[in-house]
Image (tube, rainbow, N blue to C red; front, side, top):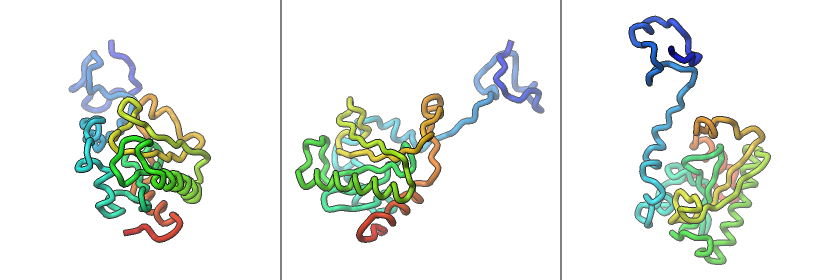
Length: 197
């Protein structure tokens, strides 16, 4: 006996392609959100970026801001949108130098790193009015760093109700704005000189 999956019954042609067993491909009540662009990152794993030549945080600043999703370039550090954001406006603060650990950056880099984090929060409050933030650095592969070889800090804006069942049950996150739109809003709101290139 076939389990009732909530799919509409007796659609034209169903009898020709189904039987009494719930085999793969039998329609069910779930919608699929396909994200094939993430496969390159997933297949590469955490060990895919070991040196300056293949590190996206080293290569990014050599390209245009639009291409690399950079919203601000500082003296020792820069701010970039996360390519795989948890929420719209998810920013990363990165030193230009290819160093893995927070203890590896200089006093000057540490000061700018902290200043850019505060500025990122102020800008995100201005452009998208989040009610909170998650700030964090995952240090090392076992600490959860996706790119452990190059230090970076996450600045994730949060809103009431932004965490729902999708990430838990479907391992899917719905993002409401394109990266290009978010980059433009944040870069234009960043204080000081225009960051558009």
